[in-house]
Length: 166
Image (cartoon, rainbow, N blue to C red; front, side, top):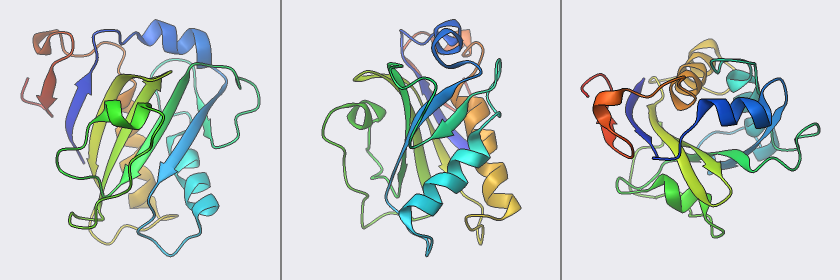
């Protein structure tokens, strides 16, 4: 379940489609609270996210082939600190997962170069594991929110909304 989202002032669905619609987008996964190896986890998440964005389908991969120079990329951080910021994930120094918080939380951030376009916080269902239907559905749902056609105008540019309450 997505429980928090943020859209930066520069968020533009049209720009996302121009760079990555019907193409690959770089996916970076940080942290791994599961038994899967890192490459396998990245592939499972990429498959769950691929084609679930509004607009032209995007394929998520740690090795994009047909849009390697796109300024856009998606970063997934498992077990983020409660005060983690998407902007930090877009910078050059990637944070480490928190050791004190829940491993069933993931933060997904869409970056344009070193700027945050959008971020969603995902609560992975209890017992869901990479490769199962619940895990895939959770990341598909988060992808639809991360790539909204139009963020809620009541939230204002750069505002943070609790899911469903802005």
